[in-house]
Image 1 (cartoon, rainbow, N blue to C red):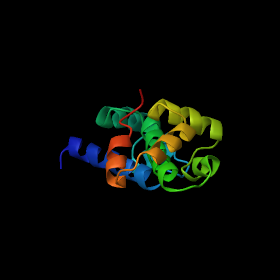
Image 2: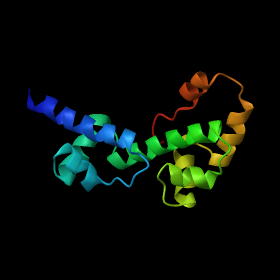
Image 3: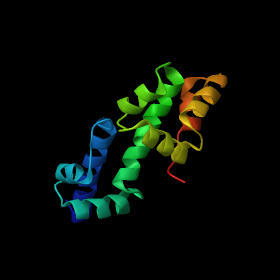
Length: 131
């Protein structure tokens, strides 16, 4: 296996952990341990590999999950905020607005008004990245 392949596998291993454990407190040192590299090397390589920082990827992943919960459940926004791994409702709302372009409350209201199959809604409403 070549060095580039090994690096990609290490980054994929860390990204898979972020996808699986997005609600857990994950920071760069913890993710670097999963990838078996130093924190500085991990941060640089993750961004070069996936086009965004580990923090931004994790925040976007959490917002994607919260979008589903806002559409499909009647749980409170605060409960959803903590369930997906945000530490405060303020940070959740600010990050959600940065990614989606509207507040969680506005998103829920507009998503409820759209009566299409959920597979179409997920594809159409999924954020691509931070602005």
